[in-house]
Image (cartoon, rainbow, N blue to C red; front, side, top):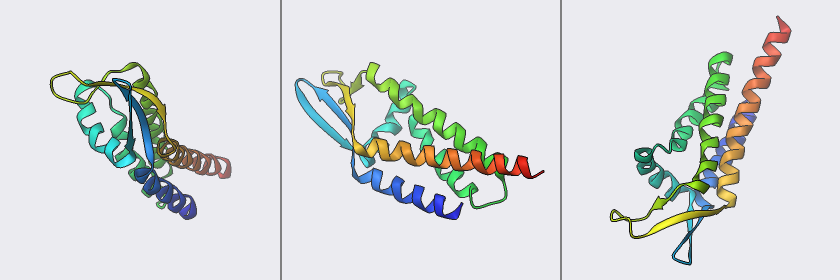
Length: 139
């Protein structure tokens, strides 16, 4: 499980640097890398977009892969995956780029950073569930 945790952390770190969200605003294309999505995600909590909370849940779940806490690790990993899945609702949400509501962007597509980020969470969730399943079969 140590290898899975390390691979997921590498994927997660690279995702911060790659384009994650491709937005359209007034005919212009805006590309947000992963780190900008994290910073904007903190503000998105104000409009009930909670996908940013998948990050600390992912970190906790990947760290719990290295401990004997199989049930807690699986719970954190599955919760991180469920919370991260809320990102797909961004296609239907107005993304305000200023405080006056003049510049409103809409999600056009996801970039490779998003897919790498989401894949890292899926990898940890699958590993945690497989680990839990193996434990239940050995008893």
